[in-house]
Image (cartoon, rainbow, N blue to C red; front, side, top):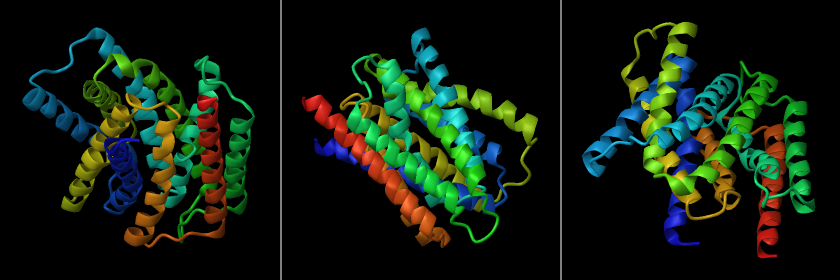
Length: 297
């Protein structure tokens, strides 16, 4: 693959991989979970529309584009961001990062039913079974990666819910990506997501109390490096490679999350996370390899 594609893979993987660490650090600063997601989306919206206005000289006006953005704002932003953020209250960034690696698995399952040229076959099924074995191992060992306050089963349920949402949105994005500009779609996604998340924050949590300076730095990181950069990189990748090959990003996200969680937050890699994570990654790699063989055939 071209160097630019690998750079995009790296940008998306690092942004999403370190986002979990930033979320857990923001929890330590007292930022509530849904308010965190809403502020993250608002910051990303401002940055994206500023770019479109001052650099591109235009903002999206197509009704069809806004329809695409509306769907993505629910299934690729609001729901998965809330679920993953809630999950990070009960498990380490590394634990949740491993669940993010299941996104290609969910994508493969939904692709079988929604994309006629991307069926499930024996190689994919083996990969899915191995990955699900990793999830089962994670759930049975009860390791959360936290010294205290861990609730791995709840974190697992929240993370899997987010993965299913992203699996659906990946198929939808692939179907729609060729016709629309990725920057505009991303901007609309965050703008419409903000319209969902702000009222939800007020309804569930109320106005957030005083936010510290460190918390604002973390929120800015989440909105820019943890949202704008990886989303733009991912949508750009989708326009240049297959939807399954684009999931290489999901192989790298857990590795970044595990590494940065250990370095920044002193998180632990327990036996359940190590073995379960290895099985998940092995299953994802097997699924991807089977897809590449199928394409060549």
